[in-house]
Image (cartoon, rainbow, N blue to C red):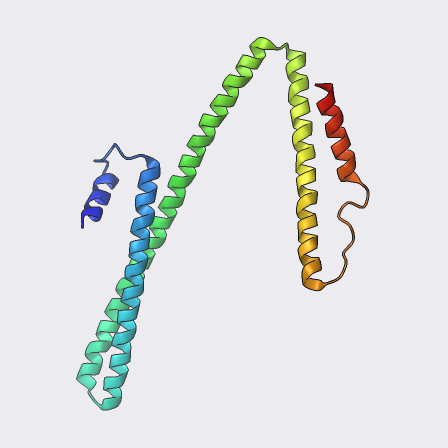
Amino acid sequence: MGFLKDMSKWLSGGQKSDSVRSATVKLKVFNKRLARQTRKMEMTAKQARDKAVRLRKAGDMEGSEFHARNYLQVKKQARAIDHFRTNLEGMVFKLEQANAVKDISVIMQGIANSLGALKNQLSVPQLTDLMTTIGIDMEDFSVVEEMEILGEIDAEIQVEVGGALPSVDPDGKIKELEEELNKLKSRD
């Protein structure tokens, strides 16, 4: 019960020392415990239903009704816990997204500081050329990466099918991009 008490304390804002990450981890652990509890309840419900069927076949209507009510009650509780788990998963997802946005804002702040330092060291035309070169390099990298992935997919298909597929780079685009990258690198 200590975990539930800590959880309720955190949710009410009483525990400020925990970071968002540790809270997310705690929520995930709690969610897994609830999932195990739901599975146990579903097994209990199944046993109650089986017992109700067995008693009904044996002619014990009162015992059968008792176990049928027990089955329905436990099944309803399991559904309620599962519904709570789903809501909890949504909350964990939102916390993770908020944390990711926070991490990205820290990274972007670092980039902004770096660009500010570059601005003080380089002229605007030099900075523009540098940014253009970085943009071109990123585009070229993306194209090369895409071609490599397509090559991997074709290789997997070829292994599965056993036949040859057309080449990924029939026009020599990868070689052309590599030569362009080498030219750009040699200019520096």
